[in-house]
Length: 204
Length: 96
Image (cartoon, rainbow over all chains, first blue to last red; front, side):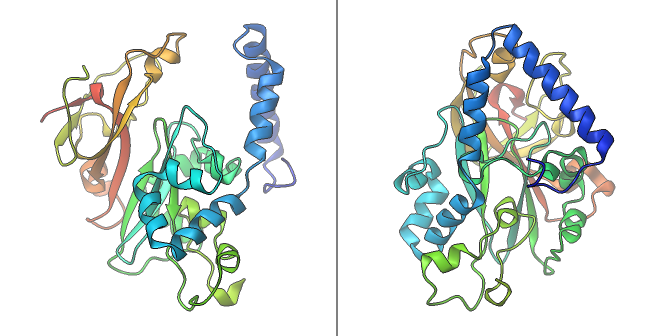
């Protein structure tokens, strides 16, 4: 994982690693879960990357019927594209428009649409993001480089329970005529969490 | 429990109860009023499962929309139109 994420302070890294190892050992000792099951969970989570979510978004931009289904019955819609969600969580997709911008956070832990995006970035799990996203989302967005136009309302989504949220970002201007693969290239992980917009065509 | 039958559009108040066990109701919405936006369906209860229980009875999960201003007051730095969606189990909700 260390090469996929920005480096953490050494002290925080070792504290977190120590805690994770202790919890893992306890869960195994108490027969809550086996090491094989844990490894299986990690392998399945890493089998997905944001490129998978990007395919879903690109399809929604191109196919109006798919888009509507994605917004009302996300499990069935992504199932059509071959993505199986885990049995115990649901998926909901929220759509950014000219009037409303969605930002996803899990204030209680780090719930994330792993079935479509893979494991969450470290900052998504940080206390700073989880605390600040709910009380000062616009400041958080500015720090990610996103300044919203006046009149755009911010709707923060706190995924507290069994539903994982994916943001359907706005389709960038000037992308008429692009195919699904080219459109998917514009869809970043951050745009599906809501801390960014999809890339514009000239910045790919 | 489970018979409250909240529907989209219903105003609700989140119970302001403090509990010691694991639950999924963030402190900042307790006692606050919002509006049910949609009902996700029924899910195993995390309050039971987190403590070795079977998660039954299942609980209906409501997506509730709050005005940010109602939650944070003047501390909220943003637009008066900004909102927060929180998924809350039905037994944490009351009719105002």
